[in-house]
Length: 220
Image (cartoon, rainbow, N blue to C red; front, side):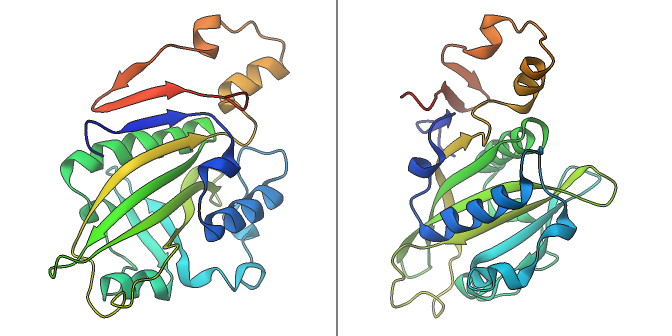
C-alpha cells in the first residue's frame, strides 16, 4: 500500500465492493454469520458457493505471524500460473504492502472487520489488470479467528489473463467496513451498557505506519 493511499474505515459495505463476486461472497458469509462475530470454518459449504469457488481463497494464520493459503481457487492460481495452496500470502507483496496487510488482518481478526483491497497486478510484458480482494474472518475448531475466507476477482478479464502470469502486484487502496456498523469491541460495550469514550467512537484522521486512516460511516 503506497504512502499516498488511504485506508478508509467504516462506510457502506455495498458501496465499498465493486465486484459482484465480492458482494456475493460477503452476502453468504454474513448470512451464515448471523449476529455473531464470525461464522465457523465448518459452516462454509462449498456447494452453496460453487459458482464463486474459482475466485475464493482461505488463509490460515501461522504461529510466527505469517499467513498461508489453505485453499486457492483455480482462477486465482491461473492468474499467477502456479498453485498457491501452502504458499505464504505475505510473499506475494512488497515489504511496504505487507505492513498494510498486517494492520488489515489485525482489524479483521480482532474487531470483526471486513477488508476490501484494490490490487493492480502486472506481467513481465508490462500488461496490467486490476482486481478486487475481499477478506473476512472465520472461527476455527478452537474458537479462535485463525482462518480467513476471501475472494480475488477481476471485473473485466483481459484476454491475456491466465496465459501471461502476474509477477508483481501492489495494493492500491484498502477499505475496512464492519457488518454491525462498528468494531466488535464497541458493539459489545454498547450491548452491555458500558460507557464508551467519545474519542473511541469517532476519531480524527490518524496514521498507522504508512496508512492514513479515515473514520467513516453509513451516513457519509
